[in-house]
Amino acid sequence: QVQLVESGGGLVQPGGSLRLSCAASGSLFSIGTMAWYRQVPGKERELVATISSLGSTNYAGSVKGRFTISRDNAKKTQYLQMISLQPEDTGVYYCNAVVRLTSLSRNNDVWGQGTQVTVAS
Image 1: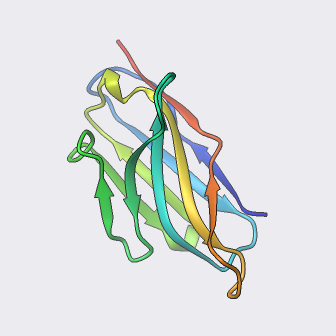
Image 2: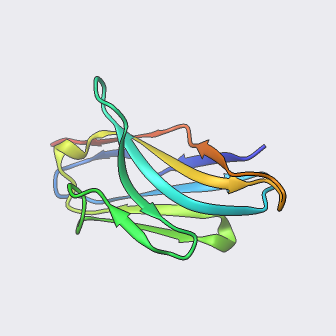
């Protein structure tokens, strides 16, 4: 069974920085697109950034220029570097990955448990 384990959340002042990590554990064949989402109470989960298996990235307009998504395929890990954080960036951040358990299996959508990011003075 594949699991995604997140780390790096916490409390930061406006203008500060954080780096989130998300490591995949368990036996798997490949990892495709990886992504970060965030959610605040009462709102739908929103897509923050994606990175393809070849390294192509996309960002939500609200974070473009401030957040950077990256991945280390050898470590089966993705990262989200966040700078110039603002109170509106507060939320629970979830990592997501499309994985294949074997060469013959179909794609599976896997989610992390979520990590809280709070931006406040």
